[in-house]
Length: 180
Image (cartoon, rainbow, N blue to C red; front, side, top):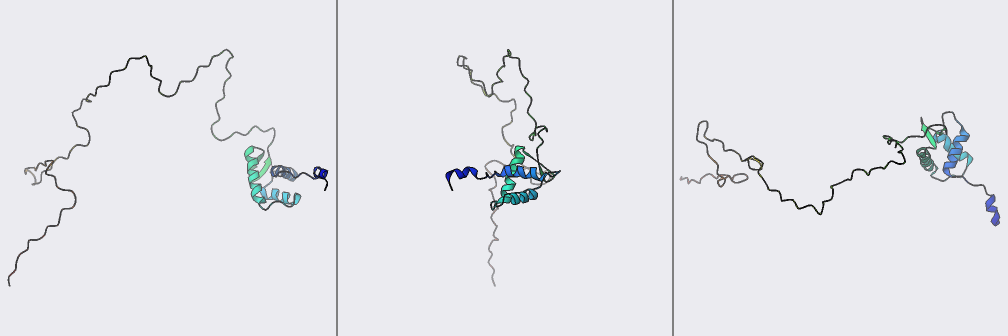
């Protein structure tokens, strides 16, 4: 082959170009599905790569996301050029009204804590004052219950004479000697 023969070779279109040409050529009323597009590509351009189905899926999804193809009822069609542009998901942004040219736009409210003025005299430190109640902080102590029935004298528990934590030790019966 001479060096000038490369220009005479037919150009192989890219996958998106092939897909768009296949949809135009099939010219089905409700669009073309994946299998009909795939069969057309295989019959028109033989020798497609091994992962042809996966490539077709990827490129169909890209063309659909870009807005070049419309996917409806499992069929792909070309987008109508007179149709309105496709809006994305979610709430649309607010439209910005054009301002008069002589209008000065104030900067938005600054965020965060304002900086301290270095010329301001220092404030006196806050004095801790009780909040008016004489109650101590935290959970109140348990109140001792009477143990000798109704009307008996209550046993007042003192902080030092508390029962130890955990299960009490097992009491052993006293050993008695038996004579025979």
